[in-house]
Image (cartoon, rainbow, N blue to C red; front, side, top):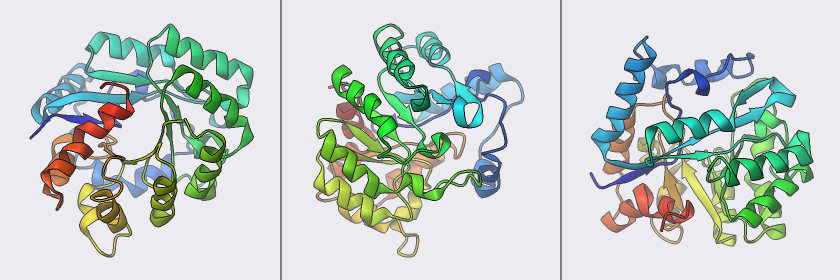
Length: 288
């Protein structure tokens, strides 16, 4: 298997798994079957060793890990400092994204700048449904502007969420269209990839050349099923959007090796597959 970049992964260490407030409990029900396929050693050192070995096995060039700050809404935070420390400890394979809370106003903007300039993080992660803000909420705009200034990409949760304490509508792709009209230079990855509004997201990406689609938190084999709703990603992603698809596992939602085996089995031309697995993410992350 060629070198890959996993655009979304959560290491099995305590800093990435803060005590839950209950707002994500329905996720465990929805993803129970998929998560049951992941081996989870009880000992953190063993779990980390197995996690790192899995990326050695698939030939991962880079793995993106993300901070989150949803303190205002749900009291949950994966700190920028912890993400930066993990990336430093594990070496250049790991690339960290910052997480800041737009509800904190100018303090969030300053925190993002510090995370990039001082901690070495390489992007911004916004989980809109956890923030209880739509993608085009104007409280996000100072952060979008700062991302353009710092020349860093932003990951925006797009599509359905399974929290019964937040609205599904916050992740509607149509809202991203308005953001791109105001910030055409903003490099965005919509991840997960927009279900049940897949075709709407494809339309937004087709309109805006800086919009990318992250196939993360989705079993890759679903893209080849006509009745899954994901088929347009395979169709458009192998043609006019072939330079805008990124892939990831959302570990521990699914095993690393099995996820990338399913990506490898998708009916894609080899040149397009290489773009999906590595080249598009490398360019999006500023690695080329």
